Image (cartoon, rainbow, N blue to C red; front, side, top):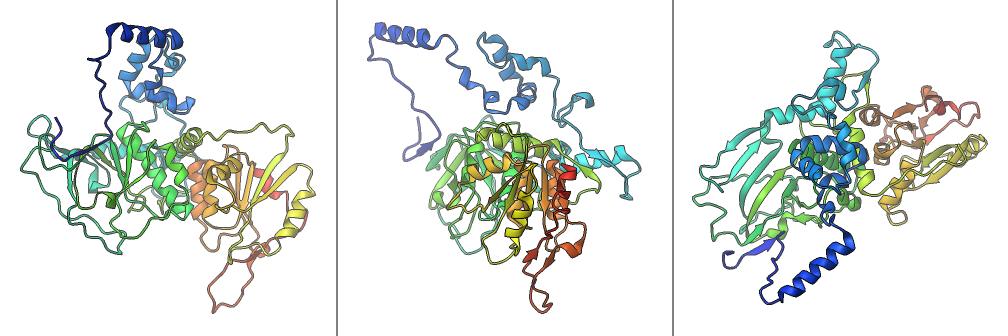
Length: 478
């Protein structure tokens, strides 16, 4: 029986059949099983919501679901059993031949490695599934339950990732201010058992991810959130979309999110703001504190990477995961042309001043199918932006958050950064993580800021070269 005054979120009401004639129940069962056969539970398999390439990995790491599938004559996943040896790399007894594709390294210029194998291993640990393995190895119990049903807290080092059971949060007197990054500072053990207490005014049964988000109006920063949520799912070995996402945001400001459709890749439910629980005592049956988007030696944002290595299975898997769950497909390239997408900007800065001439020059090359886009959210919805990007072979643009679209280019694609505005590693490193080719102008004299007044901040308005002999150059690495 629920304590008086509680609101329960994430549970489903039970059905009472006491007043229904037994013969009607039997007839209903016959209609259902006749109409859909004996396979009415096939939707219970989480693996079906994952990209087909990921399903053997999931079944290996979730033997209960795999056994259920084996026992189910109608399970649609049986053909994946041939590859159950497949592993991401962080699992115990994961043999190298069965590990997801390793990165490639072409030299050992870094002084802290002796050979290519050491370079590859370091890159794998820094930015691939080795990063997940390190976080899983760090996990330790910080709050140990004394009795069945008691609370628990398990965290990686520095508490940068945690899981909690029977979590109690008292928000009766919230401290709301203009500091978006303030921390909750008061933690204590409880003198009562959460699962039997009358103290909870709201009970959350559905598994919940707490996330402290970066800027939702900037694709580069916001996708740092999504990447780290995906990594957290691997640490937690859970990919169900029947979860809550709670913004761990102490600010009184509204959180603007231009990329909200991306949440559909991770949850079936609306994102919850922490302040939605203000003035209440809330109990969570199971909670995950996701890896932070910005932290020292985190992944994606300012990650220190060993040079001369390229391509991680982790970022490729993230791309596949989002693309699949958002139903973005790769169209058939019937004309067999190189599909070039030029990302233009209608903002004041970082514009290509001779863009029209550049477009005309590219369109003189018969091999190219050129498309010019301006990803304005009021005109092109984000999933449509992803569809355009995912069907590009070459993606060209000025330095800026829009180049984060490179995460969703096909594996063979090239990202061409016309001018890096002095930040030469940002999208080069992101391209290395994703495993797509990165190019920029080698002749610095060919691309330059229009405003040469050193007393003013650089605005990165650039003029691109017009020579027809230069235009096909980006395609050499495609």
